[in-house]
Image (cartoon, rainbow, N blue to C red; front, side):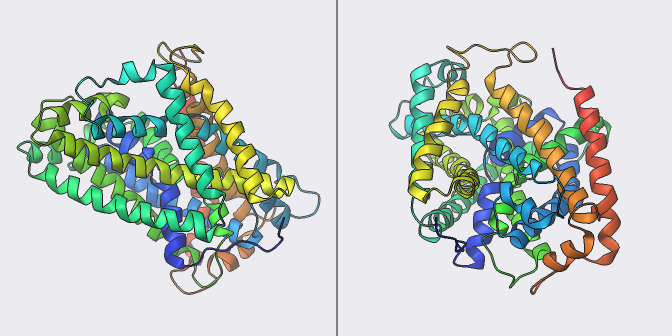
Length: 446
């Protein structure tokens, strides 16, 4: 394996690639249905606050650890920790988190591809979410398509493969979203939909809303499992990391907010329940498109943009897994792609067949393998990872505040200020820990 660290070719490539990792199903599938279930504008307000107060500090710390170590999550602690310390153990949990995420995310990406194909070929009138997830062949075939395409891209060198494809995906994504959002704002129910979506009802904000907003913030930004750290390791020190983090979060939040603009006016126009839950995207939007003029065209565009959003995250997390495995084994990029691809595909079969062949109910009625993997990642590894990063970066028992500041503030751009130290050191880990414990106590175990 070549010891020279691969580099991204441009600052734009880094920002779009990092945003690509953050932008995905969390923005355009999970954010709208959570907003609907948690009361609309109030959830959006708390979510934005969580992004600023928790997501931004966590992202700066992840980027800093990656850039300072010039290594993947499984090796970055070894470069930064003091002799005899055991922080590097968390690096293996970060790798586990990325693998667990892909155990269900590749299947969801396959669902997006399936719906896009069905609208494209005109077989969209009888589409149904339950019928799709209980069809073993559909789930396995389209999951394999997502895995093979993802690692095929990554088998090329970093700048020629991942960076180039992510640039095209992100530009196409924004163009499609803007077109669909403008269309939604012309619908008869646009006024009612936007009022529900953007005007907070403070009576609906409670502890569960705050926990949901925090988990959504970490999930949508891919924070806590080293997904951002790996891209920090691919950039130089020309720009400070606070400014770069803000750019990524702005792009990520813009996509989430535009997704809501696409969804909620359509819901109010066609009398669809805004709190339909996870089926909001699939059953609801398919019904909307099937009952509107030019619906097949709009549906094809909509699910094409969903494929772009999901695939941008798949590429980024695959790169994280591949980088970790290559640093542990010394394998070449093509060899690592083949072996990692086979491993992830085998693991994802649990989710792909979880509604038909591999029945497993980990929690309440209706839960399956997807809920199990999501529980491991979203409910546990993401918030715990954010706590670990904060303690490691801001205390002498870890990397230390001075080392962190020196790395984060290297280069031009916005800096982490000294008055922010209590936020990074105490506020972030304390609030995340409190919400994590509250979330476990109120989780729907049975």
